[in-house]
Length: 438
Ligand SMILES: Cc1cc2nc3c(=O)[nH]c(=O)nc-3n(C[C@H](O)[C@H](O)[C@H](O)COP(=O)(O)OP(=O)(O)OC[C@H]3O[C@@H](n4cnc5c(N)ncnc54)[C@H](O)[C@@H]3O)c2cc1C
Image (cartoon, rainbow, N blue to C red; front, top):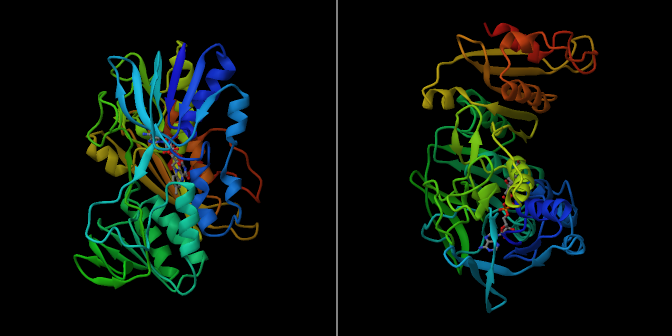
């Protein structure tokens, strides 16, 4: 069977590799528009921050390794049309057109940073952070004499803010159209992230919309909003991503994400999709949602490889577990937030508890804030959010297990979690929160 994969990063190369390991008799062609395959995009903020000086550390596996495995990787090959009736893909490679037939097609073309059509976006000095060349360009643009404006207060915007602070830029401002940053969390967590940014000297412009950019001699000089004009040498667009799916006409969500079932099948039985260009089935919300995370892309990528060669797979476990650091604070969430539960019309209760990262008689315990969302009748845990100065983020994984397994607050409260004074208290913060959720 001939399997064509469009897009060669996390999802696409996971799929290609999986097929060559488990069903090597299949021909696998990967069409990748850039010159890179298989890189850790999540590492880019830390490269920009110069916590990692070597861009090659983010290249997970070189293209030669895949080729040795028998994957026919074709770089600089950009697909612009899929003809599902004739089962062909059409595109260009370094100026030359190509058409490739397929028996099965896997679309793993990911997402692109959204750049809205505002006046002035063509000026130099405006950046996004999505690809390795983006990361190299942004890193080179930052220096201690630069006035920087970040547009967007989601997790990528906040990670970039940390990078800019670590690079000691002259002025740093973050403009966010909503009244809070980190809107995938409940507001009190966003407020804490905002306070952390302010503590480190970031000017926050919340509830403010960017209307355009002005410049001189083709170079950015200011970011314009509906409330002001801010002098800037560098502007970084971090307002989200959009699925790269214009070249194919299968069923999609309104934002263009390809709708997939739990076996990553699309509305066309010969077309599969995974990663940032596709939906995932949300275990708690019980619907197809768009959750463009590396965690999902890697799992779906591996499973879509199996699915395309006819194996039974089921990925119905996405619950949006995610984490980030903003300077001295860690934030993490899993399952549904209170906002999401409300939006979905779910019955829920919440409990917020503050406790310590570890025993008070061991040096430097830090406050942890945990918010649980749970079913008021069954006490099944639906979601959790956590923040604190240290030892906060990884605790979310225990809550993720609880949400995934449909555990009740009581079950979690009495789970046999480990304890020694440097790491936890005899009742860990997780259990204190669970036992308080009645
Ligand atoms: C700055 C940053 C930080 C992040 N941090 C985290 C994190 O901490 N945790 C987390 O879980 N996730 C994180 N993510 C998200 C994670 O990187 C993505 O979810 C993941 O890269 C998605 O992988 P993918 O293969 O689905 O898509 P992509 O990485 O978007 O790859 C798609 C590939 O398809 C290619 N392509 C696109 N269109 C075509 C076409 N028409 N023809 C041929 N090729 C095409 C692209 O060039 C690209 O190589 C972060 C993302 C960014 C940008």
